[in-house]
Length: 520
Image 1 (cartoon, rainbow, N blue to C red):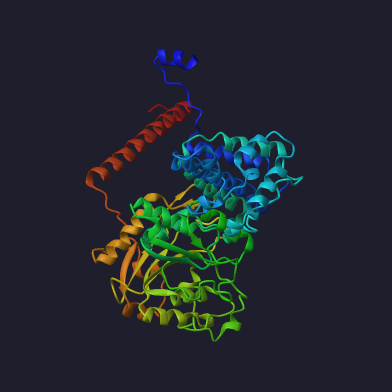
Image 2 (cartoon, rainbow, N blue to C red; image 1 turned 45 degrees about the vertical axis):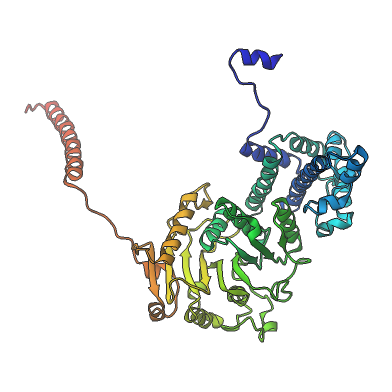
């Protein structure tokens, strides 16, 4: 009746559906209230695990309903049996969720003091299903912890239960919420965040320049898998299909590897992240694969990586990397695994552009002489929450459109401050950089002093193979010219101000003289 009355008055009935951004913020705020004494690094898995549980439950329920439609001509018993047959879900790449782990069960216990125990039991039940072998040992199981506010945990469960945006949109929203929370945890954890999170604007820049439309996409230090999420997003925004790429990743941190496994599942990405976590240098999970694209943000200036144990490794085609810095070990690992048309987009500390220590200058020279370096982009500061080390983007290509040349871009003045300590590249910035590379590849790019320059390998050789963009793009031209109208307006304004001050001084002088008995 209330809805009818509202309609008669010509007003739309109120909707209870939360907006996309509001839900993510609301989730983050509510979840922080239940955190209690848990460290952000531990609590991260509590919240992200809950998002994952909600996601796979939703996908299961979708498939559950679809089975009834698929077998609508069969009797009720046949349909019920089919709905409880794990093979019906596995065939559609959907995780089988046992009855005790389904969201309806979790939601019914939201006001119970044992809600945490219910969630822990659900996680164990999901992992125990033979068909869910990929999830074995992956899901967090510390929801019954005394440090976790059980009442607030129940409220977060209710928040998830009240999402009502349609199944497809809801799944998208849960994926976005996962990435939103990763970003916020990165800000909370500061320097520790580099292990699992690369700022989205940097990932988008790499992806938009590399353009991984089809083929094999790899990341040998994949963190939580953000490179792969953005690759799929890029493909679909350009009306491509995620089925056109195969994803291969590796991560050495066991906790971060679990985050990546959940992240891939929640975004519907069929990724090969190995059978477990692993050290890429000593346990290469994809040793026999060749990638068409690499996207990576290796640990900056990683030292003591046991490089001396790998001096005879066939990956070091351009020189043996030093044990004191793994920058060129990561680069050569990726070059070794590139297909004949392969491209690399990676983030490295600026020292890699100039260093001549520990054989680094010699390795860089050989890579340049092999004509693999396609472009270098100097990034602005304050893009990372995890480090203040200046860094650049390297783009390598085995099939360059412009042989014997390299594009240099000095983007240090790009980006917008979003807080006192953090800067982001805007969507316009990212598109501008991607356009520059497209124009460079097509041969239509014009050098812009102080910003871009296309330089031959011979010129780079004359600069001792230093790759700092500022050395090649030069200084931006300063435009000090002002038109006559601008100049005369400024001068007359200043003159009027001086006349006014002169008049005030004249009056004061007259008054002072009058006080002394003199009149002017």
